Length: 201
Ligand code: TYD
Image: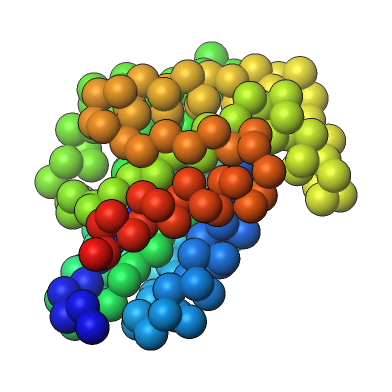
C-alpha cells in the first residue's frame, strides 16, 4: 500500500461535472483501499463559509479574489496535513478557479490575470495533478439548467465562455491534464482515473 499521500485538483467551468467525477473517483479509490479526503473550495469553514453566505455584499472582484486566497491559505494547511499523513486529497477547485473566474469580465469588473497568479503564489501548494474538465459552456450550462437551477442568461453564458478560455490558457501554461467533459460520464471517469492512477502508482 502506498504510504505517501497525493493532492489532486479538479477544475472546470460551472456544469462541467466536477463534483460527480470527484465523488466517483473518491469511491473508486476508497474501494481500492486508499484513504481519501474529498474537499472543495470555497470551503465550508471560516472565510469559505463567509464567501458562500454572501455576507460580504457588493465587493469588487479584487476584494473577492483576496477572500478566495485567504480561504485557500487555511485550506492548504489542512491539505498539507492530510497529504503528509498519507491520504489522497481530491479537491474540487483550487487556485486556477480564482485566476479563471476573477479575471473574467462581469459588469465591467475584472482583475488582471498576472496579479491573480501572484497573490496565489505565496499561499498555494503545487498539486500532483490538476485535471481540467473542459466543456463548451453551451453544453455545460444546459446541464446546470437540467438540474433545475437558474437558467442561463446570455450574460452568464458569455461569462462562462470567458472562464473556459481562461482555463484553457492556464492549462497550456501550467500543464494541466485536460479531459473533454462533453464525453459520456463513463468515458470522462475512465480518462480521469487514468490520470489519477499515474499520480498515485
Ligand atoms: P462551486 O461550489 O464549486 O460551484 P459549482 O458546484 O457550481 O462548481 O463554486 C461556487 C462558485 O464560486 C463557482 O461559480 C466558482 C466560484 N469561484 C470563484 O469565482 N473563485 C474561486 O476561487 C473559487 C474557489 C470559486
